[in-house]
Image (cartoon, helix red, strand yellow):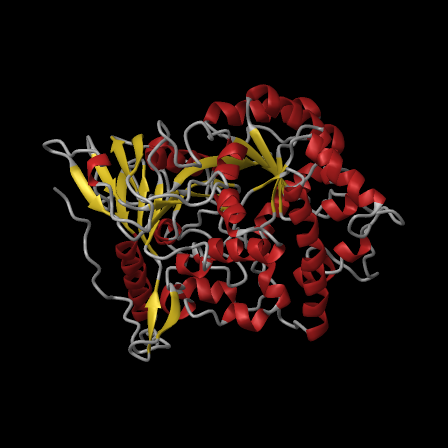
Length: 552
């Protein structure tokens, strides 16, 4: 068996031994997502009155402003005050007959978020959760667009990509990155077959290719053909192939981005060529795989050394992009905390919770003997990993946000905000975090002429929150965060995103969260499980009815 075929087959293991679904005819798409019934608009003309803008470019907040959206396009952005003086009424755009108005005074408005590492699961795979459940969690956390970088059925992926772009389903706008070699008409065993597969997947409607690795001659041919076809590319440099091509090798060959971090330390080895594996190591044993992965960065050249700088500088010259997905491994350094996050009791589907449980079969459920020393190794791993990524950003490198949710207690949507917090831990200013979650992702996908920042003539994708996320990113969680009200002496829950506008369509994100809670309640009842426990704070009522946007 060729190594690239082994990597393709390995995807089944990485995807938790999902049930294979054969390619179906276009009118026989398995596990379809329901038609959209959520959202209001788009309107011919709507005025968003009075928010403070965080525009996604890295510029500081400004406002209040009035934003006019016509259809799904930002028509104008008008400053109407200083934030410390009364609104300049004479400067405000005048509403025309038939216009809609939404009062956003006291709110912050950001570009719709872009997640560079999505997985759309469905009832037919190992997780057994509805795709609609996943989509609503993503959108409730402001994710308006993203890259699906691994799906079990290419036609299913392309079909739902098109429906997401057409707003036929309640879903982020999906860019389809098909796993290399998957579902093709012939095995990819040589460079010519690799080129034919790339041409085929482009014809199917793919936007990019997700690699795990391949024989170098096949990998280089595929990357070369992808560039010719205008396809983006990203790689999880799996240890089975990283000796052949590490992160620097693939970047030189034309790879546009990498996810996770495998392949970076290997490019900075100075006293070895191969990771120091124990003699009884077996890659298919995920306990082996992830315990040893936590020791990898310590084997690379130290920060700011000659080799470390050499690799970084060449990646910068190649205009390479990194989306680190720190949150995908956060349980490795503090398992107890990750598995007890407060949102699990209300928002984690019972089938997903069962999938998370320690297992020698399910992907990323490897923590069946997770020790203090393993967590300490991973904490050091994070320290070195974050130092590289933060300095890469400081020198002008593009870093984007990806969550890789659905594994190791990393819940859809919530994991995206956790990733943003980890960016801040790595040394990013909150404005740099927002830029990584918006404009940088749009640039990576080649969509920055339309998405990623709040600018006139761009598509109207907005996140609206009634607290300042630069002060505290936790206000972006669907559960918000707790603050003591000194006037009443009682705790109160603040934050959570209030609205997501995607393509000029306004979604009440708290309604989406309510739908998810009902899905979880129904699934628990079907299994004979009790309802979720009471919230930690009695003042917290997740089913509170929030006011609707006002219209004229």
